Image 1: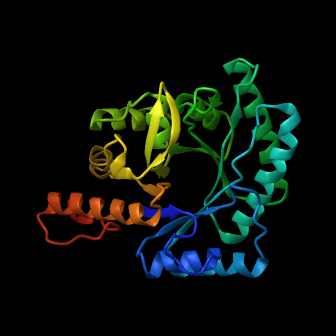
Image 2: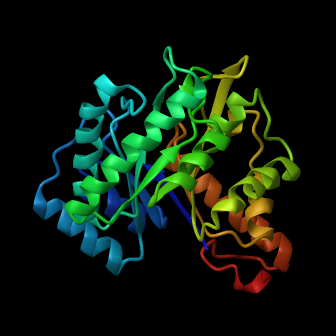
Length: 289
């Protein structure tokens, strides 16, 4: 199954609450996933809003995810405790909403070696999972691939952490992988190699961030609209459709929901190419299986 949505409240949505954004995502944009953003500091979500989102999402088949605050460092002992609180509070909100994943930026190498950073992050995630379990938070923690060399989060590192810590899953930010690999995602074979690496985790679902990206020397500079970047969308969509991967595609483009709708249109175009039909529904791949 393919789910498509955007990170946060759509730019074109007049109402600026998450409730408004969720309704707009489903009823105006005809999309079926949304990543609620707590990225610039923890937004305190009222019980009523969280419960509304939970019920509305279930009734209308919209999958929810949550992005914890950006500045988190699970690699540093001094900063880990504050990071725990940010992730834990995001997890509480996610649980109330029925969200599937709490997306987390893992941390920085700093003066530590890559292996030392890995050990610290794994240790701190295990502590955090004990806290989640104690409070009956069942939402997965998603560790995002990162786009700068000084930051922990290569695809291999994220896979290794996901292998070592229960209920931790990878969040594949394709632009970050592309930037860190200095433009490594171009062809179907490149995307397939990525999924082949992930196959060791035996995942039933992939959460994937999409945007264009400007990069230099293996480092992300900033996001671009999808059409402005040099990471082609078509071979990626061919890879997920031809393998029938169960994916949720989240637009993080500066154009946000506009590029989310663009992704949907490209998925439907790819389906029509395979079926010879004049219309398609991105949610239904049964005709091409």
